[in-house]
Amino acid sequence: ESYTSKKAREAVMQEMASILSPLNERLIKIGNGINDRLHAHGEKAWRKASKFIEIILNDDEFFSCIEKKNVQGIVSLSRNAAISTKIVNDKSWDQLYLGAQYAFAALAPKIKTICIC
Image (cartoon, rainbow, N blue to C red):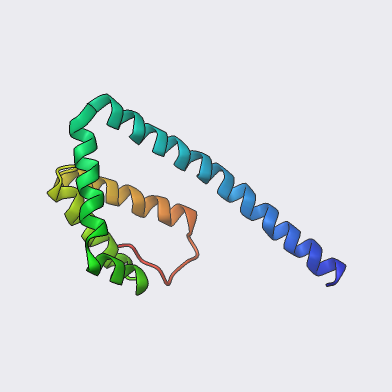
């Protein structure tokens, strides 16, 4: 391996770390916030979260969508599970979804092959 390619690889890895590290920190904060809210809302929130996970884990179509990298299918089935367990309502889902689209566009503005719309 040449010195130039090694330096280029190191530069790419460093740039990826500078991008992903803040994202990882933000995801940890979001996860902790969700956990705090679940504890604050008690048993009812835990039942809803457990039911959501149960629906997803028992849905063969969900796993088929994952295998086929069908993002629209994954989002649609997640939406149905979240609404059926009353974790969110239609309006809240739409707001969360729009926020995810904006975040995706900001984090990956050059990727044209993936669309979560």
